[in-house]
Length: 99
Image (tube, rainbow, N blue to C red; front, side, top):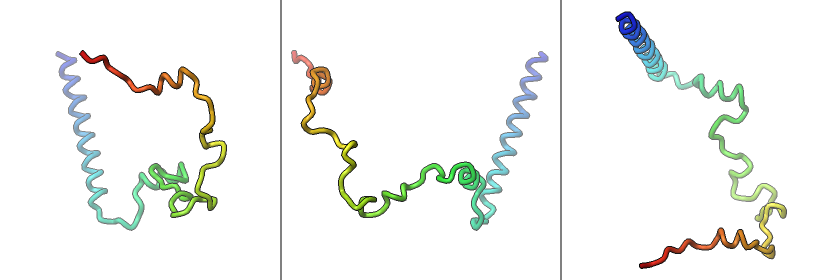
């Protein structure tokens, strides 16, 4: 009996705290003051100079950053390299017997 009452009290307290938090968040969102940055974005910029979801600045233009159009040599695959039999087998299409 005591455990049931304690559970109900703790659950009521948790629901009350959750509702209080959601009301406070709704009040912050509806305050209408959009001139100041919100706390989440300022916290992200304080700990990390590039907030989550940033756009890469060097790739945003119409041209390649170094003026070329290809990747550096060590990033390009070797078109004349020999393919091992294990790699060739792993790239083979999957076939299913008919019938």
